[in-house]
Every structure is written in structure tokens, then in C-alpha cells.
Length: 191
Picture 1 (cartoon, rainbow, N blue to C red):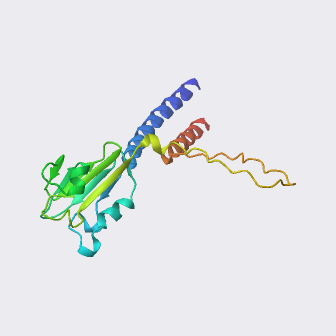
Picture 2 (picture 1 turned 30 degrees about the vertical axis):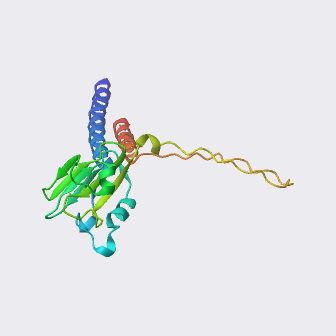
């Protein structure tokens, strides 16, 4: 009997460890997103009536540390530049330059990233993009409580009691792992 229990626990430990590693790897990969810049249009000089194409695209997305930008283009290039070069469409001093047709930039830090086209006048015609990568330390912080102005009159009814509800956020990976471990524990404990 003792031997069966120890085999069960050893098997449970091995299974749990395997599931944990598999889920951890999946969660790490799922946490990062690769964004196709410009969606189906890719990285190209926008039409004259659509010069805000990349600004609008960037505003529709949320970028986090670890995400990547994929630039797909033909007969063009993509340059990472500083803020001044971005606003002045200066291509002479890029931080990084790519011209291979498919370039992937990893967003490895919070803060601003500036990209422009290296092709003549494309930047001035709207082929540039500013990306703001969110700081993970600021995302988890809740905003400061707002002040509530006093009521201008006294009421005979009692004041409402504060809510005792608690918001709980559970990561899908953690929930999945907990379900697997619970299932395995129930299988091992049954005769």
C-alpha cells in the first residue's frame, strides 16, 4: 500500500512538473504579441488622403515590453530614429536601419519608439510611426481615489454601505494549471 502511494505521488510530481513547464512556456509565448505594422497594407507610403494611416493604426493597439513589430515592405526601408529625427523626417542618423523587405523589431523596454521610412519623401507623406510601449509597473497600479464632493442637503435615509465585493483577476495559465493539478490529485487519490 505504501509503495502504491509513493508511486502515485512520484507520478503526480512528474506530471505536475511537466504540465507546469509546458504551461509556463505557452504562457511566456502567449504573453508577447507580434504586430503587423499597417495590418494588411504593410509598411508603404500612404495615399495622400490617408497620411494618418500609421498614427491611427498605432492608436488602435496597446504595446507591451516583449511585443514585436513586423514591418513588411518592398523597395523601401524602415529606420528606428530618435524623436527629433522622427518629427523632422531626418534619415541621416538612424539608431537601426533595415532594408530587407521584412523586419522585426522587438519592443524591449517601456517608452517611446520612433520609426520612419528611409525612402525619399515617404516620411513627409506619412510613412512614419510612433509607438508608446506601456510600462508594466504602471499598468498594475490603480489610479488614486477621487474626492467626492459633499452633498448639499441632509437626507433622512441612511447612507448606503460600502460594497464588500472584491475583484479577483486570475491569469488563464494559472487557472489552467490549478485545474490540471486538481484533476491529477483526484485521480491519484481514488482507489
